[in-house]
Amino acid sequence: MKAGAMLIAAAVALAPWPATAWDPAGHMLVGQIAWEQTTPEVRARVGDLAKLLENTYNESQPYNFITAGCWMDDMRSKKGYAWSKWHYVNLTWTADGAALELPEPPHVVWALAESIKVLKAPETAPDKAAEALAMAMHFVGDIHQPMHATERNDRGGNGVLISGVPFTDLWPGTVPNLHAFWDKAFRFDQANGKIVELWQCPLTAERPIAAGEGVIAAEATKITERFSAESLKAEIAQMDPVEWTRESHKLGCTAGYPPGFEPSDHHVVELPPVFAAKSREIASRRIALAGYRLARVLNDALGR
Image 1 (cartoon, rainbow, N blue to C red):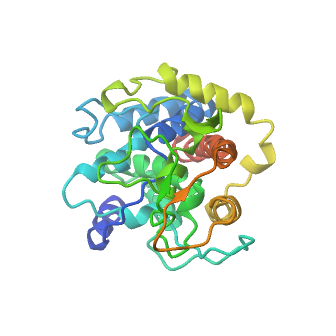
Image 2 (cartoon, rainbow, N blue to C red):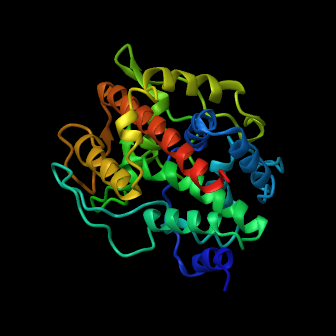
């Protein structure tokens, strides 16, 4: 069986898991930051492949460099979605976030490696290369979300119910929980003693149709001004996804839960505003790193 067919067929046996990582805005920020660091040749190649992706759940609009990273989550709307276990890796919570060995696949680190392998293979058909591209772009983002590498018997924070966060766009059927907060943490801050939403994720129909457009480009610029490629040079040079995962795990353990949190089955946790402000800095930095590192992945895989 060819590499592309193997990657897609392998998903059939996997059971669903409800977590996403970064909301669509987060994945588009990663895409915009990566676009700024890729070569013109790679930008064109990504654009050509992205147009081949099924776009039923993108308001039937073609995907592009900035929106391709949303494809994996958009496809959750399609019956029979079987890639849920590919978005995260279960690393047990410890007080200090001590490094742990990866469990057996499937998990996000394995899925990223497989998608890059398919993308690079000369024999991969264009439609399968497009899917592998979208997977790779999405998984690089996923790995950098702290709660996608932290397990406290709560499904990466999905089991921790929270209050005090003015969510405006939760995934349908999702109750306010800690994982959902971290998916959007880069958009929340504190003001006047409350948690506030600084800006809203564009509706699907309002997603950018090219790089440099709208709120995504504006917010990406703010992030890269705070966390420039030069200031993160040493970390960007670390291109082992296992190490990216360990970075996220340590953050999930040491900063992913509010101060004083203890697991419980019977109460809702009110997030302190100062926690939201700190989380915004962490999430924004992780998105910057994901974008810079994704650019290197794409330049290597497609720069030929």
